[in-house]
Length: 265
Image (cartoon, one colour):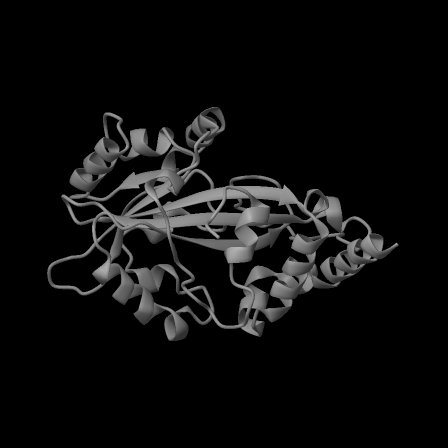
């Protein structure tokens, strides 16, 4: 079973236990990027937030190599504008054994801004995620160091959010206000990130792509809703607080129960 390009296809590949896992699977070249991207929506997102595209000094060569790999002229802006996926470039300094973010074009972020992450090592980029340093940091750094050109890997990540916005930067608003088991189907959304990793052969930079897919719970089959309810309950306390899970968990469980009952009626 390989990664698909929709919420219901991506959920089964994502974390559904307390322990964090890299959860990578090998992909073929024809499985890499969304085959029918909505480039109008993407262009509008970049036009609204030009700060979403940033490139560090010295990162022009990987950006140019990326564009050439994708068959477009230019650099990071043109590469990311020609496909659905957000694109991040990571490189390793000669004196260091870890990778840093040196370029990013992120039209559809999930609670982070490019300016806050530029230049940071992977561990620092993921510092807000509870358990990352203890459970994943060493394994991720080791995988990145060993990744060979030509190899292509993917994984899935999920969130429950209260908006269908592809750019999820909620700011100061109150999250999940007024969500109940009765309205959760239309007020809660499953948000999946389809993430891929590959090494660029000439510069050695690593490309990390993020394809975002969002659907209201009412549009998902009952088994997907039940999967989400179980996965949310497996998230440990610190990460629950960071994601605001306590504000919607009773509504999600109640909604999942209602969907299950509908199947048995």
